Amino acid sequence: MNVLGLVFSLMLILSYGFYACWDKQVASTKVRKTYLGHQKANRKILNSYQSLVYKNYRSTTKPSVGEETFSISKLKKEEQPTNYTQINQSCAKINLLPLIQEGKENNQALYDFTIHLIGSLYKPFCQGEKRFEHRLLDSLLKAAAYQKEDFSLEKIDLQDPTLQKKYYKMLKGTKNWDLTSKTGYPSLLDYIKIETSTDKICIFHAHISLLNTLFGDKAATFLYDELHSKETTALTKELIDTACSHTHRISPDPDLLDLLDLGPHHDHAELKKTLVAEDKASHVILKKVVHFPKG
Image (cartoon, rainbow, N blue to C red; front, side, top):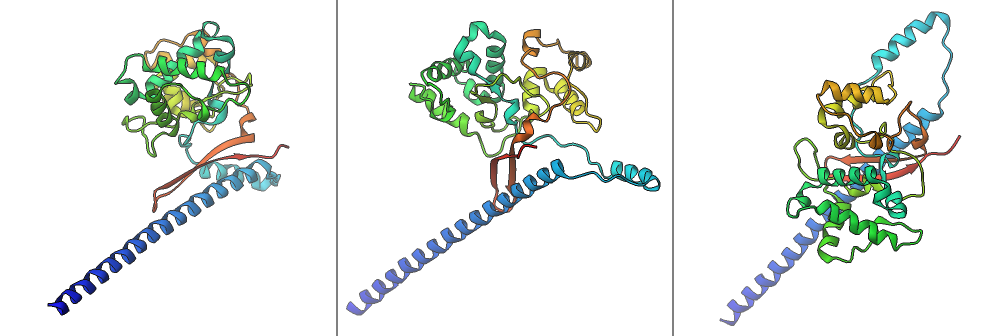
């Protein structure tokens, strides 16, 4: 009887030991997979950054007379259609500082646009509460007004635990989101900012979701394709009116258009850009802000 108990005890000890080793091995494999995913995604961002730097600084060689026609035709064949930008760049974010310093009464178009953006991109939060977007933005502006100079959206305290929790989820966003299928939602940090800048919203570097909020789905697709075509088109009021008329949509309020950077495309935003890379094997997604040297 004592021998049988000893055998069962040894088997139990060995079982626990085997389980501990197996659990440790599984955890180690997950950590290794995640680490390699981060390294691969980071390498993709580094390669993209180096390609952009090279593109900005490379010199153009003057072809000879006999080679000029061939080079131009070859370049046209190699050009690829432009894909939708993965993220809303910093120059295309909505600056809330005028609402904080001057109030929404003096910036009604900016306030209404921000409300419409929150309501469009964060419907899961708005469905459970009426005028949720108004309460969130008003609380955000009120809390930010108490900050002196360091307007950090991540550190703002809304003085409401329930609202703060939802605000945190909106800042974080979901790992995957799709505007067309209405699954998930992006990070709020990609769409709003608080900066001492007078620059207008740059539509050229904006994510198509921002254009959808402004002009509707069909008009946004038309404008995005026009702006990012091979022959870059300037964003003008006439082009916006054309897009709205073709899609049977009313043109936006002139006060709203004053918030946009109309005219030819500028490269001012290339000094700072947000790059996104994903390792499909480990499903690791990295987002990093890179800075380009001047000159």
